[in-house]
Length: 346
Ligand code: AMP
Ligand code: MG
Image 1 (tube, rainbow, N blue to C red):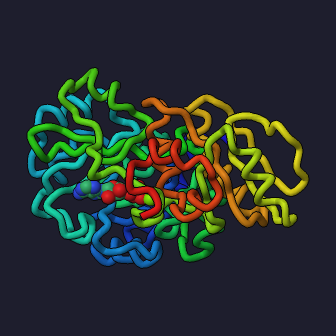
Image 2 (spheres, rainbow, N blue to C red):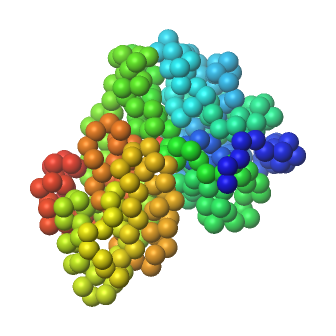
């Protein structure tokens, strides 16, 4: 379903719920968000409770226009201003010094706040009608696969969320690029649809994510974006071999690949997501959800190509994977070591 705008009465219902301190869900171009009035600490607390999210994990404040940025940020450095002008509304989140009035529950107790102006027409409609900031993380339980359709939110939260605005499938399908503009040199904290190269066309000094921030080993970080079925990343050359190994005892295996299978196997569910990074990203969470329902013992994901276009996808896949499974099923440890760094398996 493709929706551009929603009827005003649906927006009004969501605004009313927000004003009453309720949690609602709404679409953005990246993923669906679980939103609360950013100026109501009790409502913000409900978001953390619903998600089961640790209190130290901050939320992004969504606003309708950069002109209200000063309400949330103590200062807006020129680099942040330039990035906002070029990429907002859009899939970019800026981390800035927190204005004194910003609730510490939103920022995880930090002195910085993350802010975004989303471009989705329904998110824009909602933010304009509400007239203030909406604190919103992705509308999934902590650590699980993010939602890119309204039905995903319903499946996850049922009636606990009073209003779920249905804006159709998210066009980008992966969370926003996060850039911290707190220090002298702006730095990417999370890769997303907007690449480092694109950011540098506006602010040449933006730094990529440092190795210390990157998930060094799948599973070393707190698991995130993860289906319930264990997920492993497998080298393309050995994919069929690993499938044969795992299905030898007639157990089902689910595969997310960029190509069709070379050998048929009745115990596997295979999704060919193709080789275009943007389309692969758009469908990633829908595909992971489908494979999670396949009744498989394991989800195998064909390793995605090197290169910037795949950075965001690679980041999510590595966080969704569990290290012990990668090691157990993939004989080609050397290739994985090159990708994940030296600490593989530790
Ligand atoms: P989600 O809402 O699930 O997309 O996750 C929000 C992301 O924004 C998390 O990765 C947070 O760590 C990040 N974030 C939010 N606020 C801040 C902040 N003040 N500083 C750094 N990262 C932040
Ligand atoms: Mg999330």
